[in-house]
Image (cartoon, rainbow, N blue to C red; front, side, top):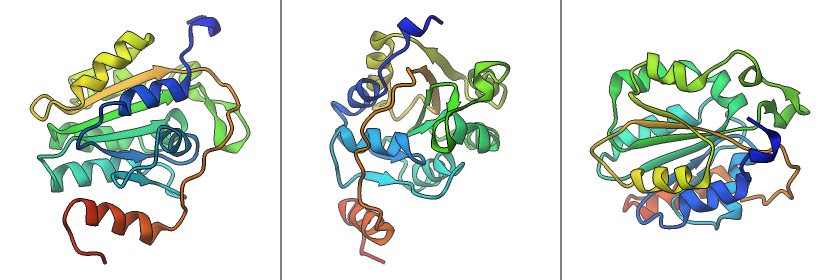
Length: 196
C-alpha cells in the first residue's frame, strides 16, 4: 500500500468510538491507549500500561465475563505480534461480543520505530483466520473502518478482527491516568460492580 493511502490513527480510533454506546474499549500498550484517550476519556476505557502482549487476552476475559457487552480491543502490530497466541484461544472460545483492531504502522513505535514483521512477512489477518476467527479482514479505507465500527455492536457475529494500515506520524501523546486501581474500579463501577 502506498504511504499516501495509509490512514490516520487518531481518525480511525475516533471513528471506532464515535457511537460507542455500551462498548468497553481496551487500549494496548502505548500509542493505542493514547489514541483511545484522545477520542475522549470514558469510564468504559481500560488503559493497559506495561502489559505488552496482553490486550487481546484481557479483552477475551472481559468478553467471556460480560457476554451482553460489546468489547473492543485497540492495539498495535508490535503488541499483537508479541501476543499472537491470543488468536488461537480467541478462535477456540469464539466470544461473539469481542472485536480486535490492530493499528498497523509496520513498526515498533514504543521502542524506537524499528521495522516490524508486518512490513515483510507476518500476515495477522491470515493468522487470525487460521486460528478460527472467521471474520478477519484487512482495512485500508475509512468507509471500511465505519462499517467495522457498526459491526462491533453486533453481539451475535464475533469474534471479529481487523488489521488497519495506518501512517507512522509522530503524534502528541494524550496520556490517560496511569493509576491502575482507579481505572479498574472506575470500569467495575460503571458495569455495576463494587470496587476492589
